[in-house]
Image (cartoon, rainbow, N blue to C red; front, side, top):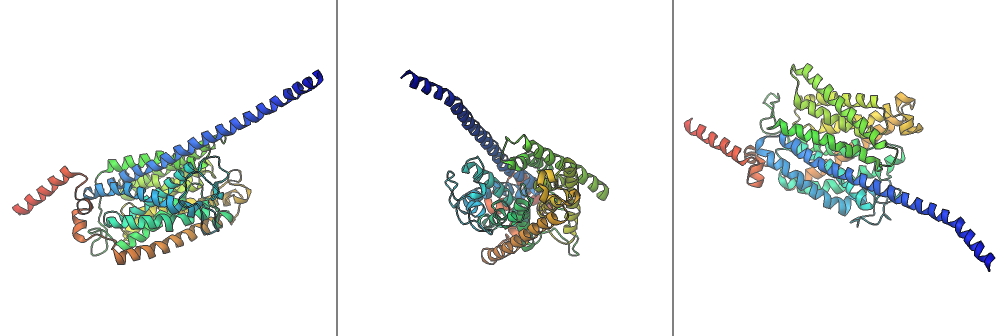
Length: 459
């Protein structure tokens, strides 16, 4: 009997360390999951807060008579995107399906991930991953409206907001991030220069073409007139908010805080690019105009952030500086050039988010290092040849063509049915009053109106 007891005690003594080790492993896994979940949730909050940055940026960059409308539709369209993405968009983008689109995971309950092989390896809840990806979809939709500013009907935001979220955005998101055909051929887009920014900017570009210029933007000979925004301080504050929130955008896309601090490296390259874009664009505008233009400097910051979004995890700090500076300079000249060609893009959405997104995506094919991107995905300057550059170019071209064609079809249908643009009278009095019945600055606008009436009487 005593021998059996002794054997049992000895076996238990041997087993206890194993159980303790297993318990330690389980605790470590739970801790890792909790930390990573908290990090991604923080990233989602920062990216959602980018809506505040867009509201200030766009309101400050447009005229006072449209300020309330421009800021308010930011809240409206994020609400529309939230419901549409939950119901359909998330499943199309990340659900199991084909290389072209997902066909499962609609109306997600935020708990199950059986329909989502694309992120099954992540140790974060489906609900948090959904919120993070919703934030990106919301940003992409916010970019769209830059090309519609000051002349689009309110109903267009409802209709095209839903259609963009379920029929446009999820496709490229699935192709690149959901295990689709671009992912399978090796395209890299870490946080969305193409998936988020190029998509939104392309739809904005098509909207700009169909809506035509604002009243008074161009003279009969085609020369452009400046239509300055009403409050540059708001614009500056909006850009600062976006710059800060971009750390959630890029560094949050590591979806892990327990990876030897790599999210900090991504934040470093992101910040360097933005800084280079600010300085380079201001200097170029100073040389071109003879005066240092603040608004172009702000666009340079955003263009640089857009460009580094794809490459932030794959390039060295010096390359991030180059990518950001080139993005800012390129955006400056394309913005000036498009205006000379008769394109009225009120906040330069296509230059800042579209062409800068193209450059940022292609820059991976030039600057990606073997250590960060992998031996088979290195850029041209790191011994990778032209292969990765070609893959990146194919992804850009495919996304642009798809979004442009679908946006044109959908917006043309809307134009033929409910119409895209407000009447001339409504545009002249401002969308605050014509669409909402009140001004964003009621006291100031009342003084302007009364002064205008007095001037008419005296005249």
